[in-house]
Length: 153
Image 1 (spheres, rainbow, N blue to C red):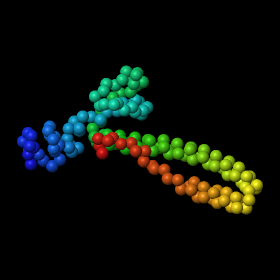
Image 2: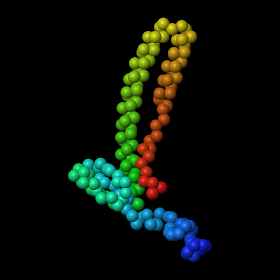
Image 3: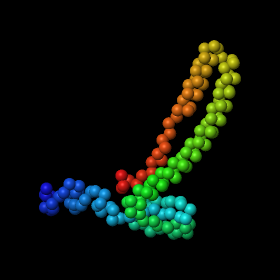
């Protein structure tokens, strides 16, 4: 098939509008590196654009510009997800421990209040406690931090 405007021969995977080019991963974006700024401690900053210069404030803090190929960027993405998963699990663990403490206190207060309730009120409060106990252990948290490099997707 040929382009109606420029008569260039088009192949499957070519951009259909002028100027033409391939839309596959082996195309033009792979010529440009994926860039991050890293310091010696493993901290990472993300520039807005790959062609930006390393900001002076980051250079003073020991950051360096790191250019990655798509293959290296995929590996970097897996590492970032792994690090972020560890952070997320620590945070969720601390959060669940804090909630457990608060829930224990609230249940104790409710049990004290139940002494002054009608039998129907006590049954309702007991049912609420039992339901909360069942649901507490079944909360769903994803283990995917969701770090993605969109151009590689």
